[in-house]
Length: 138
Image 1 (cartoon, helix red, strand yellow):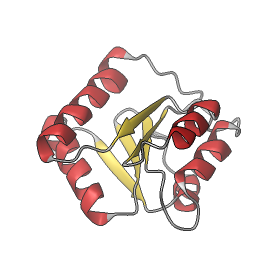
Image 2 (image 1 turned 135 degrees about the vertical axis):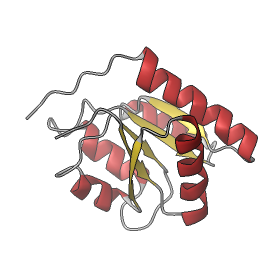
Image 3 (image 1 turned 90 degrees about the horizontal axis):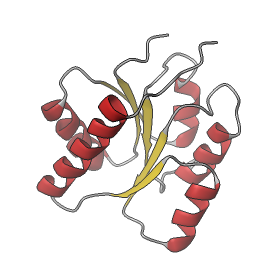
Image 4 (image 1 turned 180 degrees about the vertical axis):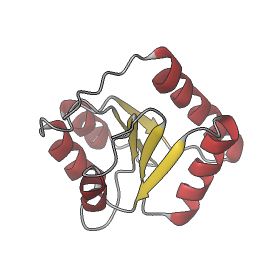
């Protein structure tokens, strides 16, 4: 399964997803984005997609980001995939939960296009250029 330039975006809000996708593609048109609208769908997609990174919202229907994070980080097959939690929540309990369950980063969603673009630029620079991510093949 190819994973070189794929991001799994787990976001139930169409507008937020569109803004994130636009920012990513304006900075790195070579990145493929696969979207899931909840944690359950994201876990199912991992049967066919091997992303370099997962960017996941916390508040979603059916299975929220917290549940999906805990599931993925305790699953030997998927625990090595970096997961960045991205949300409007600055609730200390959410932040603590995410790090206790091995989230690789926690980002607040930007409130305007400029902030979103800067945040996405930083995220892409780190995960696609600086960090050397190793994906065990199965």
